View 1 (cartoon, rainbow, N blue to C red):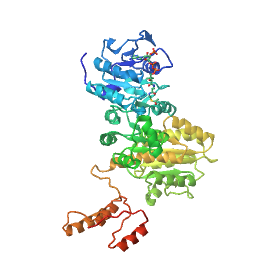
View 2 (view 1 turned 180 degrees about the horizontal axis):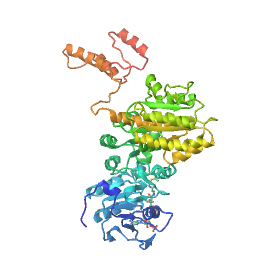
View 3 (view 1 turned 45 degrees about the vertical axis):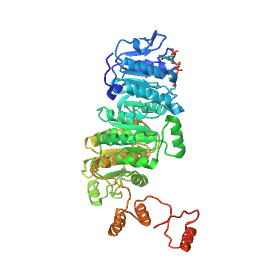
View 4 (view 1 turned 45 degrees about the horizontal axis):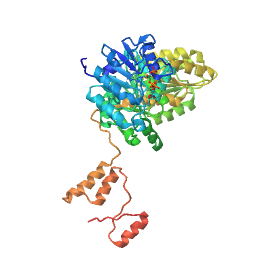
Length: 534
Ligand code: ACO
């Protein structure tokens, strides 16, 4: 069989697929994967592989890959670890482009040698490996659900790359509950070959994917990932959840997917440098994904809070500071914009306080004024349920202004607090993907994520990200060295430079006599180390 060149696109859009280890037994993963492919709407040929033959779910079974007389793009492997290498040999012989190895029992349990053997053989024979130790791949582009997840995946605009299979599988359920459409969901597991960078390179150019969410435990080829992320974030937002932040978490990650979690501070800084937005929880990441996929990026830094409650307005202002949402602060311009919509006893300063007497009609007027104002880039509308407030009219308000704001390129988030009627409204509209939240901090965190991405994109490409380094102090020290015509720095100068660069050093002093050395040592505290400064 003629061997075709392997590419990641065909992993997402295979022309044919085999399931090695397809089973008649509904309790086995091999049955579940086949069932999801067959019932998930995949239109191209499917080949179940099992020595027993027969048919499963009405699809004829082949005893081995080599018995299929057509090309196979992808083979999903769901057989015990001990037989996987042989199966990869068959894949290579058959010219399979991608082997999706669901099987566990490799590097994550110390069986690294077998995993390396498989990866090395596959690489030498042109088979790309996804996994092992994964739950599979879902790709809306091919209506392909080659996973053992339960439930139906709704096609949509959010791509998810996950190192944890179980988390990924449960995210499928969560996307359904949250009514979030998914463009792709890929589990990378032990990353014997294909990693996040390979997948990002494809997804960043894929039209249907608007936002990418990544769950990472450890990074192998960090430099490549940073490069790919930098390119990807220029095209679309990438939200990253990185687990293994704590010492205990890092140990757990090592035994889960064999990952080295690395320094969390370094990871955090690197993510900022390449424009990825880091979420702490799955809930937060999901909310951000949805908000970013529905809201236009703000054109500037003018966010306005509109509220009928002073207290919730204050909380919102606090949240804006926490999440880096820039509040518009021009009393003259705000006074003019809201002159006709804020009552005498209200406030036209940001937060705009319509007061407790505001009806939904008053909110409507204020949101219209903000929507028309060229000075406003984003609005956070907060409503507390008070006696004169009429939640039944909220539907009209939400639908109308979400539509209008989107058309005018402005971001909009709602947060409502109250009884059953408000809760019902939050449930109904957030389930439909509208930016309606119960918790004001949740609403602001979404706007904050949008701003974080906006700020990154607005940064000039040549603008360097610098740490808090006192360059002037370093220059001055180095100038002294040059004046002395030296080509080395003295130890106290080195210490000065390290301090200016905020690199922590053990406390140290220069002593000119034994007595001074003893005095310094007693002040510093023991044990101390002495070295000669010549
Ligand atoms: N070619 C074709 N079929 C084969 C081959 C082969 N070389 N070898 C075995 N088979 C058949 C078997 O005969 C069996 O079919 P049958 O039901 O008709 O007898 C079928 O393939 C499956 O083989 P079993 O030996 O029954 O294996 P089982 O299904 O019990 O387990 C599995 C296989 C699921 C891959 C298991 O080894 C495993 O790794 N489980 C964990 C998977 C996992 O969790 N992955 C990570 C996901 S992410 C997460 O955290 C959830």
